[in-house]
Image (cartoon, rainbow, N blue to C red; front, side, top):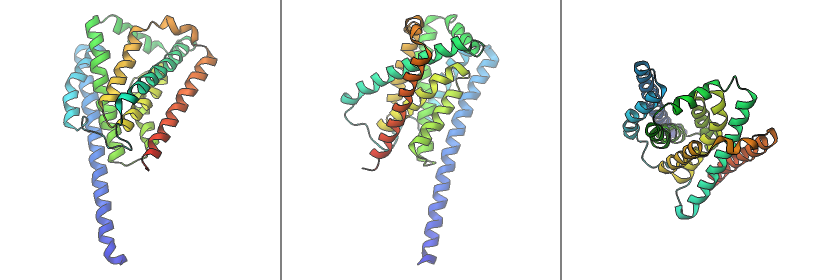
Length: 260
């Protein structure tokens, strides 16, 4: 029996490797195209804003071609969206708040580390309002979610078959590092994990896109001075610790729900 079973086992192993290689190829292609397009536009225009705009416009159809818009077969499917949508939205507001007071505290405590973030804010302020809103509320959420969740997270969960917590960790770390400065990494780590879990739970890429857009709307229209008095070490530690606990709990929900 062991002799006859060997070819079957070998065939399954080869199929698994092919599936994993295809997943890796899609991930690499998506990042090369996305980052390469932005770098090319940045070289021509010397404007990070135009690079982000152009990169999003060019790569969104590419991500669609790579299957980023198709449903993700995670551990759970979207059940009763009318009952759960408000909970995801409220949780997103909390993730935004905990991230913002962390950014403010880091900027005030380590001003030299926040120089890149301040330049980014100044560039956005110098950009026409319509272009800024188009980028931050529409194009950036769509392009980044198609890349990070629709391609990266989806492929490492389906193709590489890694656990939820590890897929969430990998995708959120890459998402944070892509923002390019230490200050933003602090808040985008939890945001990326939250968006990945929203995608895992619902299976619909539209959900993290909508939540990402809501996050950017809050960041754009809520004055930093309004929450700056709350950016104390004690409150930062307390709120961000709870945000991390919420991420861990959501990982457990997705993991154990898949065993039903």
